Image (cartoon, rainbow, N blue to C red; front, side, top):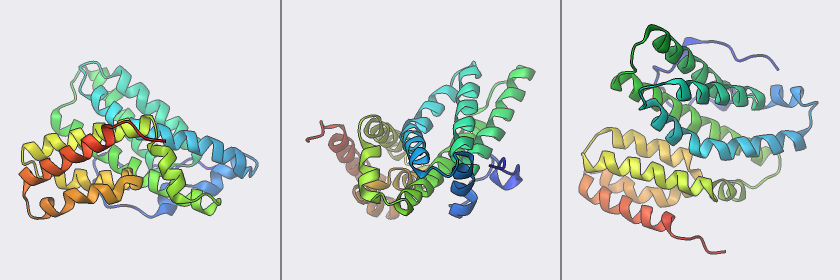
Length: 229
């Protein structure tokens, strides 16, 4: 498989809209690396898909620390895993973010809030696009999207959703306009829960942040409740 191209358009300072799947995931290249074994690729990509559920929240916490070593390592690990499954966009986003953090550490400088927010937003967007591209690949390999997404939301995925909803609620409580973009990202990232997440859309469009908080609280309660089997 060819290494992802190092293009400026995939940089951490970009908040571009969802990119085409062909620029996000190189499934054919990954399959070639695995001797065209779709079964093996499926096993690897399912684990990778589940890991993506917790990554944005985990990275956000690591980027807030004074010592950026753990954040740098997390990005390096994600970069390697992304290369294995052919996740070109996320690979490049991790690569550039890792380089930025290494430069800061070497110079003894801190990651300021603006840079942290920009890096986090770019990472969340890349993760959301990657999750969607992987879900589409699962369909092409004969797995129903709904069933696959439901598995991804189980366990750690459900906890990640609640964590993201709490982050959204914090923005809503401050009437922060970034809540609009955050909500869009959550709908893509947690595609299996997109229908439920739409309950926040109407008040957001009306800039009724108080009602959006109410809807968000209800979602947090629902997804925090024990899942019945």
